Image (cartoon, rainbow, N blue to C red; front, side, top):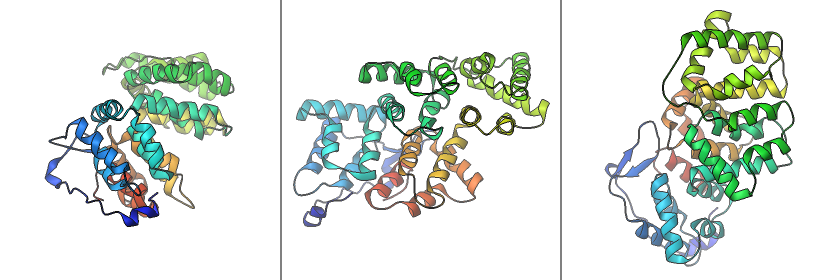
Length: 343
């Protein structure tokens, strides 16, 4: 949120021409072809904190156009120069949904997910929705990222992620989640079609008998590589007529069914999962800013262009336009920046 004090400041904005930006793969984040040194960026951010009010535009202009490695260097340099962490500096100067979004973005991605996981595990709110972030880091991220999250979690909270899941999450959900977070999947494209057929049939047996927490189900979903699982899901549909997630939801309406559906969608199509997260966050009365922020911050450097395409496919409208219409102020400016738009 902008401070009213900013009305009395006149810090100039630096305009960066469109031609100076570059995209990375399916990421929506625009970074600069020629990046200022971490010391320059750190000093400009510090300058944005000085005086009456905070220059939010300067913060957006810098942090909203730096990738994870560049942000890491800025964090390290800021601490050396000013004897405080950049996160602490931001906490003092920005607030509201904008503040939450900028701080989440500024964290190292593994630390970000570790903190989000701890927040939901310690929350008094219970239900499937609050477990989304744990499924996402396990099923929509690389094995290396998950290992980094688990290490960051131990360093930050003096306990392991799986320990806190065991304490906070009831059975049988805890069985599934512990299986997911303790796995280290093979991450190359390797598919055994015979195994896919066998495991598709085994999953069908468990769904038919409503034994969804069976050891075999947990083993298959938590250990097989994503390419193998996608082949298994495809074979399931060919053999049994319906997508596996639909059959799971037909077998019951409980939390376990909802959790397994989320796991399968995250594995089969992360972009579909995050498009639905955005859609659910902004369609209807009110806005779920926390979910909206998490989706955009998490995927801006990974596959947000795919998420946008899937959003258009599902909702027949533009994700960018939906975010613009449903947010305001510096929060809107920052999200639009991460989506690759102009502020």
